[in-house]
Image (cartoon, rainbow, N blue to C red; front, side, top):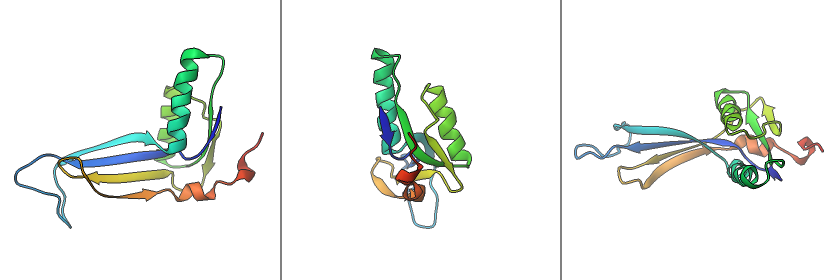
Length: 130
C-alpha cells in the first residue's frame, strides 16, 4: 500500500488544573507538553502497517512524504524505524518538518494553535518515482 501525504510532529501543551491560574495572554502557566507523531498520511501509513504486520507480514506499506533535515525530521525517521515502518519514501528537504502545535486549557478545550505545514506544499508528483 502506498500512502502519499504528510508526516508531522504534534506538540500538545495543556495547562495543569489550578485554582490560582488560568491561561492568560503574555504569560505562561504550569502544565505539561507532549510530542507525538502526526500527519494524516503518517497516521494512515502506521495504521495500515500495523494491520499488514499482523495479518500479512510479507507485505508492507510505504509513506511518501516530505520531511525536513531538522531535529523533528530525525525524530520522525527514528520513531518510524522503531515501529519497523519503511522510511525510504520520506523525502528530505531543506525546510522545516511539518509541526502542529496546540494549546489546551485546564479542561482540555482547545485554546489555539499553529500548524506549520508549509513543507507539504513543496511536495509534488514529480518527486514520486516508481
